[in-house]
Figure 1: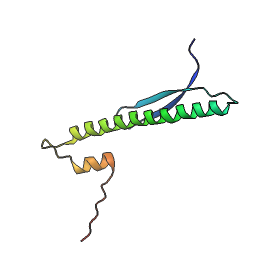
Figure 2: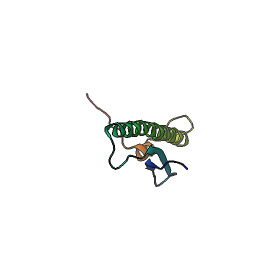
Figure 3: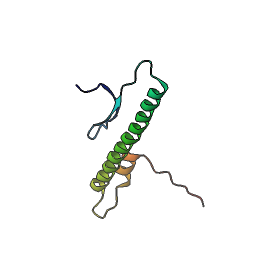
Figure 4: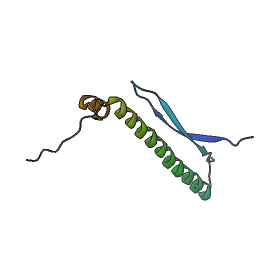
Length: 96
């Protein structure tokens, strides 16, 4: 029988594109853990957060690359209006 576990999850939802869920299993922490049990749980949680963050970042980087490819004008130049809609307006420092 598999040991019970908890899940660390993150969900990506965008109105104009696919949704995606990310998940990592965590060991259960007893209701009265020992100091060593707490350390083990927190260590596993810390490692899982880093791995989950890496997965999300990789996914989002790929989404940005895909968006950039579909939004170019044939010369590899992205339509500025579309880019601002996707990622927000670029702040330009205009010192004269």
